[in-house]
Length: 146
Image (cartoon, rainbow, N blue to C red; front, side):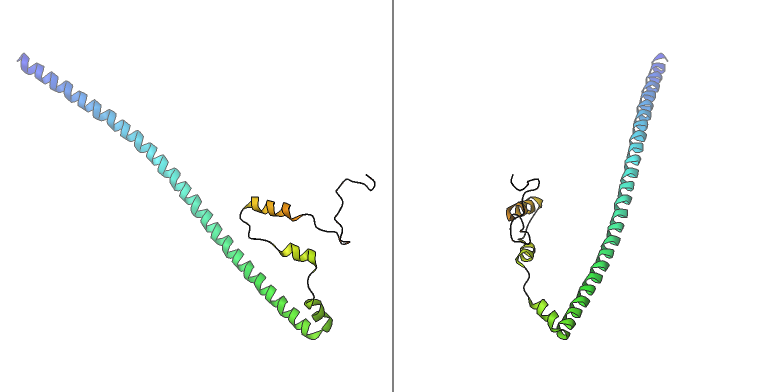
């Protein structure tokens, strides 16, 4: 009988040990599940924010397209008006047919630039613009006779 009692106690202890192990594993699983739920909630918030930003970007792009179309329409209208004026008035036609001044032409000339560093390099390599008299402007802070 004592052997059976001892076997029963061993089985009971083994059962208690297994139940304790299962209980601690369950607690760990619950803790991991809680952390995963937090991560999922944070991910969902991020997804929602990204979707909201995408919708705002789409609305902004639509507004920009609308403005571009309006600007193109205005430019076309102004071009048509200029053409009409050129046909109606000889002095407007003569003005429209004259070449732009050299300083304005230099402003319109721009190579294909990639990046801000190339733009800064291009700007610094161009030199100073001429004043209306054709002479370079004096350095700021210098007085005649310095």
